[in-house]
Amino acid sequence: MTFLPDGRALVTEKRGSIKLWREGEPARLVSGGPQPVYGGQGGMGDVILHPDFADNRLVYLSWVEAGQGGKGAAVGRARLVEDTAGARLDGLQVIWRQEPKVSGNGHFGHRLAFGPDGMLYFERRAPEIRSCAKSGRGSRQDRAVDRCRNDPSDNPWYDQGRLRAQIWSLGHRNPLGIAFDGAGRLWEIEMGPRGGMRSTMSCAAPIMAGRGHRTGRTMTVATFRPRGWRRVPGAQGLVGPVNLPPGSPMLYSGKAFPHWQGDAFIGAPGGEALIRIDLDGERAVKADQWAMDSRIR
Image 1 (spheres, rainbow, N blue to C red):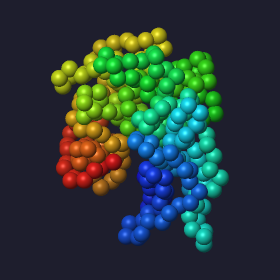
Image 2: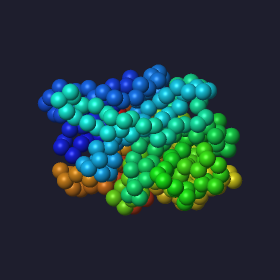
Image 3: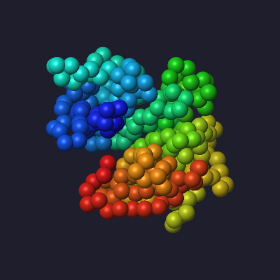
């Protein structure tokens, strides 16, 4: 979900519905959205506003679509229009499609965020690099964070073909959310490999995806470069195992809790909890965990 300037929220539902919600009122359907392929982890994904939404009313969406060879994520944008006929998305245009498509209904990522540089960042599966990145436990690290807008020629693999040109950070394992902090650093959270029950949060950089193998409660961090894996001693930007399957992160910037400004909050759907991560520069430490008795996505 994403909040509009007037306090209402646009909410996506996995089967494909988009709703406009205000506290204390029934949610209203928004027409004109995409028709996602629903199943497993596939369906409708994220929704965010263009940084100049107040002027251009542009909304960005992600979803899973079918195509030659299987299924893949897609990103599109449309203009939110409200009139006497209701609320609708006008002129939906696909601006990015995953290539190649993949089989099955596995993890598609596709969380979205605008960076301070004005570019659009999003998580995705990256099957074109599947043979290059593999963890010691056999779990593929074929997930990436892409950066695109106009001509992002400073992306690390810009000169390695059309499919790799937009990749900004590589080597992630099932990323489940991205968010920028006040200093412009991009943080991402992902599902860990040990039984699918541990997560990590890392400060993603162009050639560093804070990923590694767990040994007890310590982390051995590795980074992916075009020519392979390289150990980075003392790498920062990694919070240890959270021990719960994570939802997406939100970096707090409100005024109600000033001592938490700049910290991250993570939902735990399976663990039915809300977790606070204390962020200090590129250092991340789990600080609080509250039982919610409900799945927090």
